[in-house]
Structures are given as structure tokens and as C-alpha cells.
Length: 274
Image (cartoon, rainbow, N blue to C red; front, side, top):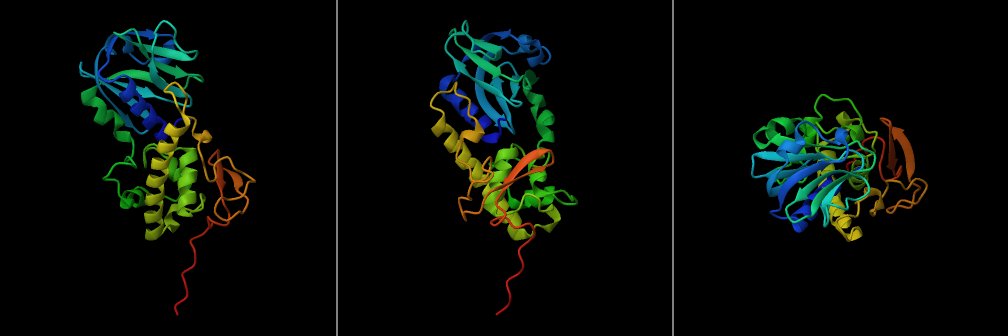
């Protein structure tokens, strides 16, 4: 499932391959993938690409923005010939050059919509802060958790609390911060929030860089689980840090991976005074 690094990768690839392109028409190959009057409004000069959470945004000079919700298998990229769309193309945004921006979605959980750009802040307000935003502070995490009793990993995956983190990178960030995924958020001290904040940002930056390393061409789908990971998908294998076997458990109906030695269940005891 695409998470923030994969969505960011798609945006950067689009900036490279189709800057200032003009969409002249839209070919909808699966009606359920298109929301509202997409074909009517998804035309015009592309003035930029951006991302919000796991959504790819394509801004047009007409006052509309195309919002691509990636779902579980969504991928949007430039392809040279609109007459030969890739296998799982659900929508093709055809460019005046004859190329296209192909929205592929094998499992058909994603969608595309044309939204008034002026309404974007209102529509996207439900998402939490962007973890790679320079203004994102560790206190934003702490404040978002105030009054909650849930475990920390489901908290990190709640898009209302923090934008863009999914199952893979939440697990990886918690490992980097040495925090057990089942720790209740009220038990996290200030130093835990600081460590988690640093780990989230470092993990996401590394994931974005690695995504470019393993995908030579824009059409290659940037599968997160193909990247170098510390715990995700490594049940039974030795921890890269301490060699203890990685454990797998089901948490909030999702697979969770962690090192039982590096990630203590409870807050570590205070050091004795000397």
C-alpha cells in the first residue's frame, strides 16, 4: 500500500517527466475510479504537483486541482503513448503531446477527483500535520495524543493525528525510536516523543531516498516492502541491531513487527542515582 514516501516519489517523478504539460482530455477506463465531473474539469495547463498525506495533487491553471487518492495499489506516472495505456490503467489524463498521465490501480481502491483549488484547505483539513514539514514539532505529536488511551502504533497510523504514515513506516519509526508498538500513548515521556519525532522524520527521508534507488523508471511501482527495512516483514529473522529474532503480532487488525529486546514494552526504569 502506498504511504507517504511512495506518494512523494510519484510527485517528484511527475515534476521531472511532465512539467508544465497540458491535459487536453480524459479517458476513463473504469467509471468507479472517477469521482464527480472529473472528465469535464480535468483539463488545462498543469502548474504544479504536490502531495498531502497519501494523496497526489495535480494543480491546473483553470482553478481546479486533481486529487489522486492512491488507495492500496494506486500509481500515477507519465507514459509516452496514450493509445497504449498500461495494463491496470483506470484513468488516462491525455496530454497535448500524445503522452498521458496514467492512473494505474490494480485492486481498484483508489480514485481521482477534480476539486476547486480554493476548497482544498477545507477538504484536506481532516488530515493531521505533515511529518516532513519544517514546522512539524515533537509537541504536535504529544498534543495530538492528549486524552487518548490507545497504543502508539495505531495512533501513528491515524491520518487525523499524523498524515502519511502507514503500517510499514510506523513500525520502522518505532523501531528506530526504541519504542514498543503496544506502548499506550499516556506512558510516553517527553524524551520518547522527541525520539519518535526524530525517528519518523529520519525514517521517511531515508525511505524516499531508497525508493528512488530501487525504481529506475517512473512506471515501476515503488513497493515499500521492497526497500531495506529493519523490522517490517522480518519475523523470525535476527534484529539488525541486537540479533534477537523479530516478532510478529496482530495489532488493530494489522501485522506488527518489532524487536522484543530493542523495543521495551514499558517505559524503561529510571537510572539509579549515584
